[in-house]
Image (cartoon, rainbow, N blue to C red; front, side, top):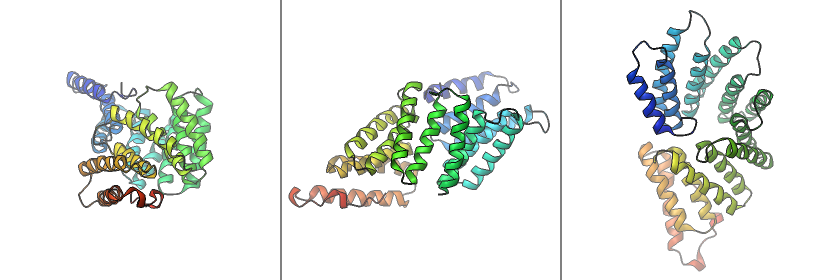
Amino acid sequence: MCDMSEYGKSEKYLKRLLTDLPPNHSDRSKIYFHLGRVCYFRGEMSHALDYYAQAMELQKSEAAPKKNSFDIARTLHNIANIYSEQKQFGKALEYYEKALAMKRAILPDNPDHPSIATTLSGMSSVYRKQEELDKALELCQLSYEMKKLSLSVDHPSIADSLNALGVIYYEMEDFEQASDCYRKALAIKQTSLPPTHPSISETLNNMGLVYRQKGDYDKALICYTQALEIQQTTLPSDSSDLADTYNYLCKIYSELYDFEKALEMARCRLNILKKNVDEDDEQITSTKIRIDEIIKEINQPTKIRKDPYSIESFF
């Protein structure tokens, strides 16, 4: 159910299992692990980290002394994902490297195993966030080639690598390569995942960024709108991913002269930010400034409105 984005049902089911099982049952570590995944996908990083810590403690007690465990390696990888999201990049790389070393020790005869490729992809993401784009691209391409050797062409993990490559190419300002990667990723996701899976909305938003960069605002609007519809179905109402999509929509509506809709999107973003960050956070400040700018545009007579393309977005 978690992989089908039914996070509420997954959490309820897993917690019931945890209550029903005896304290020493071997499945408890797996339940904590999957509860961590549920929280991660819902953006509840601190809760996810707590569950993974409980899973790791049990996994270490289950493994033979000094023996590598694939379960431990998976948990190390997922903890690294959280640190990456929290921008604790040093810790993220530390945990990815531990996971990678353990996986390679367990799989000496299968160096191209998809799980190894996934950890390389995670490391690539950290380097990208640190703006080391050449290193990020090298690891991401390596991960992608490894996955192609062992997975079907329409596997969601292949789509994840294509999406990640698209992000790197976008940040390198190679928009044609980015667009090509995103289109391929979206095609795979739409055939292999449920129609409301958050991963689809992620790629739609990325495609919207490319279209906006190219000045194709109508196509960008379509992508952002479709992404928002998915996120409103599957994510908590205070999700930071929702705030990002409202931000994209605010920008595109401004560029299409629809300042009323731009104002609505900016206010939606502000409401979410107030639930997630301190009142003096830069994101809240810049969003309030943006709202004031849009209100000024709305209050101007149409004939003397400024060109929306000259309005700088503060966020």
